[in-house]
Length: 152
Image (cartoon, rainbow, N blue to C red; front, side):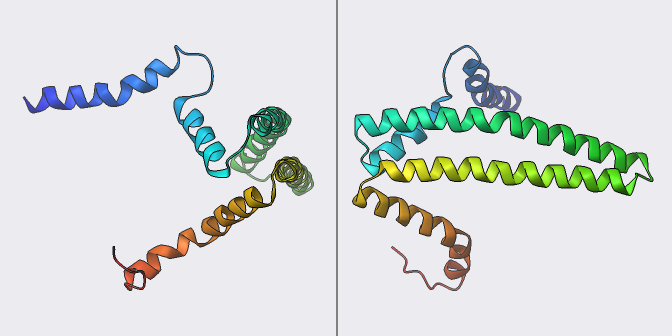
Protein backbone atom coordinates (compact mmCIF):
# COMPACT_ATOMS: atom_id res chain seq x y z
CA UNK A 1 0.00 0.00 0.00
CA UNK A 2 2.83 2.39 0.90
CA UNK A 3 4.56 1.74 -2.43
CA UNK A 4 1.35 2.44 -4.33
CA UNK A 5 0.94 5.76 -2.50
CA UNK A 6 4.54 6.71 -3.27
CA UNK A 7 4.07 5.89 -6.95
CA UNK A 8 0.82 7.88 -7.07
CA UNK A 9 2.49 10.82 -5.33
CA UNK A 10 5.41 10.70 -7.77
CA UNK A 11 3.03 10.65 -10.72
CA UNK A 12 1.07 13.57 -9.29
CA UNK A 13 4.27 15.60 -8.98
CA UNK A 14 5.75 14.65 -12.36
CA UNK A 15 2.59 14.73 -14.49
CA UNK A 16 2.18 18.52 -14.59
CA UNK A 17 5.81 18.93 -15.59
CA UNK A 18 5.47 16.42 -18.41
CA UNK A 19 2.19 17.92 -19.56
CA UNK A 20 3.76 21.38 -19.96
CA UNK A 21 5.74 20.17 -22.97
CA UNK A 22 2.45 19.57 -24.80
CA UNK A 23 1.19 23.16 -24.54
CA UNK A 24 2.50 26.19 -26.37
CA UNK A 25 3.20 29.47 -24.63
CA UNK A 26 4.63 30.37 -21.25
CA UNK A 27 4.34 27.98 -18.33
CA UNK A 28 1.38 28.55 -16.01
CA UNK A 29 3.63 29.85 -13.23
CA UNK A 30 4.91 32.62 -15.53
CA UNK A 31 1.36 33.55 -16.52
CA UNK A 32 0.35 33.69 -12.83
CA UNK A 33 3.38 35.84 -11.95
CA UNK A 34 2.62 38.18 -14.87
CA UNK A 35 -0.97 38.52 -13.68
CA UNK A 36 0.17 39.28 -10.13
CA UNK A 37 2.46 42.08 -11.34
CA UNK A 38 -0.33 43.52 -13.49
CA UNK A 39 -2.81 43.40 -10.60
CA UNK A 40 -0.44 44.73 -7.93
CA UNK A 41 0.74 47.65 -10.06
CA UNK A 42 -2.76 48.13 -11.52
CA UNK A 43 -1.41 48.30 -15.07
CA UNK A 44 -3.83 49.25 -17.82
CA UNK A 45 -4.10 47.40 -21.14
CA UNK A 46 -1.71 49.74 -22.97
CA UNK A 47 0.89 49.39 -20.22
CA UNK A 48 0.57 45.60 -20.27
CA UNK A 49 0.98 45.50 -24.07
CA UNK A 50 4.04 47.78 -23.91
CA UNK A 51 5.54 45.78 -21.04
CA UNK A 52 4.99 42.47 -22.85
CA UNK A 53 6.73 43.84 -25.93
CA UNK A 54 9.70 45.25 -24.01
CA UNK A 55 10.05 42.04 -21.98
CA UNK A 56 10.29 39.95 -25.17
CA UNK A 57 12.82 42.39 -26.61
CA UNK A 58 14.80 42.28 -23.33
CA UNK A 59 14.75 38.48 -23.19
CA UNK A 60 15.75 38.17 -26.85
CA UNK A 61 18.61 40.65 -26.35
CA UNK A 62 19.91 38.69 -23.35
CA UNK A 63 19.86 35.22 -24.93
CA UNK A 64 22.88 35.50 -27.27
CA UNK A 65 24.92 37.23 -24.57
CA UNK A 66 24.09 34.51 -22.04
CA UNK A 67 24.93 31.82 -24.59
CA UNK A 68 28.30 33.42 -25.35
CA UNK A 69 29.00 33.59 -21.61
CA UNK A 70 28.17 29.90 -21.21
CA UNK A 71 30.56 29.02 -24.04
CA UNK A 72 33.40 31.13 -22.63
CA UNK A 73 32.84 29.87 -19.08
CA UNK A 74 32.90 26.26 -20.30
CA UNK A 75 36.09 26.97 -22.24
CA UNK A 76 37.68 28.54 -19.16
CA UNK A 77 36.63 25.62 -16.95
CA UNK A 78 38.00 23.14 -19.47
CA UNK A 79 41.34 24.96 -19.61
CA UNK A 80 41.66 25.07 -15.83
CA UNK A 81 40.69 21.41 -15.41
CA UNK A 82 43.21 20.38 -18.07
CA UNK A 83 45.95 21.80 -15.87
CA UNK A 84 48.59 24.48 -16.38
CA UNK A 85 46.48 26.89 -18.45
CA UNK A 86 48.12 29.80 -20.24
CA UNK A 87 47.71 32.82 -17.92
CA UNK A 88 47.28 35.24 -20.83
CA UNK A 89 44.48 33.16 -22.36
CA UNK A 90 42.81 32.75 -18.97
CA UNK A 91 43.01 36.49 -18.39
CA UNK A 92 41.54 37.23 -21.81
CA UNK A 93 38.65 34.84 -21.18
CA UNK A 94 37.97 36.33 -17.76
CA UNK A 95 37.90 39.83 -19.26
CA UNK A 96 35.59 38.72 -22.07
CA UNK A 97 33.22 37.15 -19.54
CA UNK A 98 33.30 40.32 -17.44
CA UNK A 99 32.48 42.42 -20.52
CA UNK A 100 29.54 40.15 -21.34
CA UNK A 101 28.32 40.35 -17.74
CA UNK A 102 28.48 44.16 -17.93
CA UNK A 103 26.58 44.06 -21.23
CA UNK A 104 23.87 41.95 -19.57
CA UNK A 105 23.66 44.58 -16.85
CA UNK A 106 23.19 47.30 -19.47
CA UNK A 107 20.45 45.31 -21.21
CA UNK A 108 18.66 44.81 -17.91
CA UNK A 109 19.06 48.46 -16.88
CA UNK A 110 17.55 49.63 -20.16
CA UNK A 111 14.62 47.24 -19.68
CA UNK A 112 14.10 48.44 -16.12
CA UNK A 113 14.28 52.13 -17.08
CA UNK A 114 11.85 51.57 -19.95
CA UNK A 115 9.44 49.78 -17.61
CA UNK A 116 9.68 52.56 -15.03
CA UNK A 117 8.85 55.09 -17.76
CA UNK A 118 5.52 53.27 -18.30
CA UNK A 119 4.40 53.78 -14.71
CA UNK A 120 2.52 56.65 -13.14
CA UNK A 121 3.58 57.97 -9.73
CA UNK A 122 1.40 55.57 -7.70
CA UNK A 123 2.56 52.55 -9.70
CA UNK A 124 6.22 53.59 -9.30
CA UNK A 125 5.65 53.91 -5.55
CA UNK A 126 4.21 50.38 -5.44
CA UNK A 127 7.19 49.00 -7.35
CA UNK A 128 9.49 50.87 -4.95
CA UNK A 129 7.77 49.08 -2.07
CA UNK A 130 8.50 45.71 -3.73
CA UNK A 131 12.16 46.70 -4.23
CA UNK A 132 12.51 47.65 -0.57
CA UNK A 133 10.78 44.43 0.53
CA UNK A 134 13.18 42.41 -1.62
CA UNK A 135 16.19 44.05 0.02
CA UNK A 136 15.03 43.27 3.57
CA UNK A 137 13.60 39.82 2.88
CA UNK A 138 16.85 38.03 3.76
CA UNK A 139 17.09 39.60 7.22
CA UNK A 140 13.49 38.96 8.28
CA UNK A 141 14.27 35.44 9.63
CA UNK A 142 16.76 37.02 12.08
CA UNK A 143 14.06 39.31 13.43
CA UNK A 144 11.63 36.40 13.67
CA UNK A 145 14.20 34.30 15.51
CA UNK A 146 14.40 36.91 18.26
CA UNK A 147 10.63 37.47 18.16
CA UNK A 148 10.99 41.10 17.11
CA UNK A 149 8.15 40.75 14.64
CA UNK A 150 4.69 40.63 16.17
CA UNK A 151 2.90 37.33 16.04
CA UNK A 152 -0.49 37.42 14.42
